[in-house]
Length: 103
Image 1 (cartoon, rainbow, N blue to C red):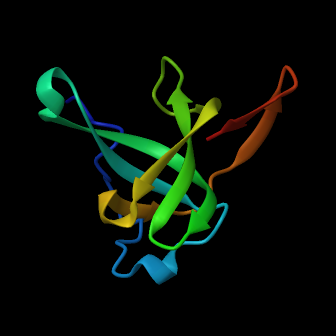
Image 2: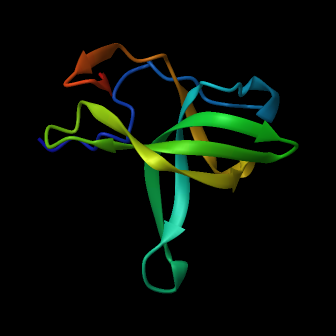
């Protein structure tokens, strides 16, 4: 059975009801438009770096080959709070070759 890493398989996530629930440092699942003519919705794990009014600045996380560990990407992205799918619990963090990896 194939499991999509971005579709929650347990109750370890919190559905967001209000933008007030979001704080700097939170981990979220967010949707972004992409593909041909921006017709595809992609889901990514992100960490909130800054909040200004209704705009949220996040740093994306890139998954490793096993889709269970994530590393931070260096670029930041701004998006609207309406694009948030869920708030994730804080992950476990390990140090590997001088880089933080989130599990």
